[in-house]
Each structure stands twice: as structure tokens, then as C-alpha cells.
Image 1 (cartoon, rainbow, N blue to C red):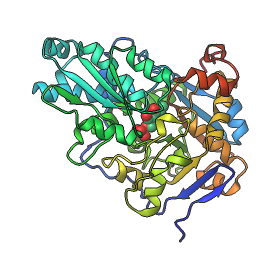
Image 2: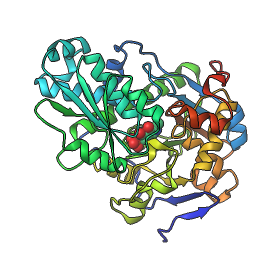
Image 3: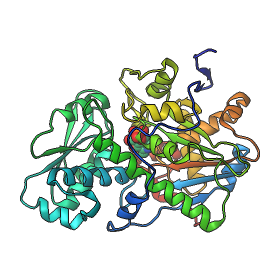
Image 4: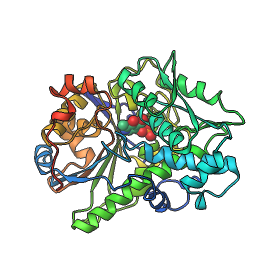
Length: 400
Ligand SMILES: Cc1ncc(COP(=O)(O)O)c(C=O)c1O
């Protein structure tokens, strides 16, 4: 069989020949509700909305489209705080020699008082803001590294949490390497990607993201909605997708067929697709200039790569114009989605005219699709340029 992706009209895809029925455990253990239970104790916690977007389902030619709306989560414009918070608590517990299981935010803040701890992270925006927020809640300092070219609004967002923001002259992957060098006796690196010898914190990031999928299960049960037959995850280093794949791989839809899993990347930073084709982790060198800034990663996280390799049915890479199209489609449906947030809808819209891709993705007339809008308008200037109006002028969708 060919390992070449199929390329057409700003979209390419690769049907994964290494897909397996289940994902490897890799020491994670069973999917647990513990991070959700801990998040529920944080100030401002509420489950985010799950929209049942009939008009977009009709446009895609599927039975239903559920959108988990993470444009506002714990006071921030993306889901990333869910990983940053659980990972920070784990890192702090490790540093204090305490069990994370009984370390509350208040107890951690008291224990860190006067200790001079700094949280360090590299980011293309959202993760770093989450870490900076956690530092603020804990009364600690934070140093956040961003690649050159990061939108001013994203830098200002991080700085607004009280962080020192350093611009690294290079890609996101260069910023990651620079952040690893800052680790020290009182400098705790809270990264969402892993490297040799550094896995515990990125593992906690994946666990933290599971919160969303438990909330989806709870809401589907509460409203009697149809469970998904297709789930799609937008990916940078793959931690978010790994959380989703751990949750959904091995599940079946209402008809008993396995849930179809899809991973979406920018065409210019499709390191997961490249790795799948090669059968091993591959780097896609930068510069990575997609507007999908959160997905501009050239190297998968080595911790989660085996989960993506086994758990993904189809890898899709899209040009920016498809996520632009999706941002507009979401706005028309009353949902604010930033560039990375809209990427999975972008891939489905790109598939609309591609019968072969539709079939690969499982986009049949009776399909029920689940997507996550992973961020709001984190670059308001580009949002207004793409959508034609500022995010504040998008009439919010009433709760379905
Ligand atoms: C909004 C948004 N969506 C999705 C992702 C992808 O997450 P991951 O890097 O874990 O693949 C990111 C990463 O920064 C992001 O910011």
C-alpha cells in the first residue's frame, strides 16, 4: 500500500495503516475522572457548553454535529488551562514532596509562600497563558517563552497574568528546547510536550485534558443525545489528541461500529501525518507560519506519539483557508472559534467535495460528529480580518 498522502484543494490526508483497535497504556493507567473532580474545585469552574449545531450538520451532510465550546474555560480563552493546571499541581506536589491527591490550591499556595519558585513554559500562546495563570493563583512567578512572530495579543494575554514573556528567535520547537534549559532548583518546567527524561508533567497535561471528554459524556447522557461516531482532534504536539484518543479509542457508536478518529494539522506543520507515514517520529522543519498558531509544531511529543500512531484512523492536513472558512461558519452559528479552534471543522468542510475523504472520515448521512472548539479569538485582529467582524459582534448561540 502507498504511504503517500492524497492531496487536493488545500487538503491532504493519510489513512493510517498502523491504526489498532486500542491505544497503548504507556503507564497512564485507566482513564480517570480525578482531574475533572479537582478542576471542579477551582475558582470559576463550570462545564463548558456542548452545542448541537444542526445547521452545520446539514452543511456537512451528517446527522448531527456536537461542538464542545472551549472558547471560554476557567476565565481563559482556550481549553489549555485544563492541562496546565493539573500539570502544575503535579509538578508543585513533586517539588514539595507531597501527594497531588490531597494538595489543594490553597495548601500549595501556602507551601510555596516565600519559596521563590518560578514556573517555566514554552508556548505558542494558550498553554503558556494557562501556566502563567496557575503561577498567579499560586503566588509564584512565571517565565513564558514564545517563538518569534507570536501575535502581539497572545503575548499581551500571557503578560496580563503577571508572567515575564521571552521571545525566542526561532520556532515553537526552539522555544521548547530553550525552556528545558531553564530548569533549576526553584524553576519548575511545566511543558505540554515531552523529551527524553521528561514525561511526568506532560503526562499530567494529557490527564488534565480528559476533563472535557468526561463533561461531554455527562452532557450526552443528560440530554439523551446520540453518542459520536466520528471524533476529530486538532493537533500540535499531540497531547490534546492523545487525551481524546485515550477516551474514545475502542468505543463504538450507536450501531456498534468503532468510533472513527481523525487528527487535523496545518499543511505546513503536519509532523504527525509525516510520522505516521514514516512509521516513526519525524520532524517537519520550520518556519511554521500557519495562522493556526497553536498547531504550529514541527515535532510530536514523544510521550504521546504511540497513542496517536495506534489510535488515529485518518490524518488530515489543511491550508489556512479552510480554517478561515470554518471560523466564518462557526461565527454564523453563533460560536467564536479562533484559528486553531476551528481547524477540525475546516477539515470537514474541506472534505465536503471529496467523496473519497468523506468516506475515509466516516462522514455518512447517519454519522454523529464531535469536534472541540479549542480556543476563542486569541488573535482578535486576525479574527476580525477573517470573519469580517470582531468577536464581540458574534451573536452568541443560545444553549441548545
Ligand atoms: C487552541 C489549540 N488547539 C489545539 C492545540 C493542540 O494541542 P497539542 O499541542 O496538545 O496537540 C493547541 C496547542 O497549543 C491549541 O492552542
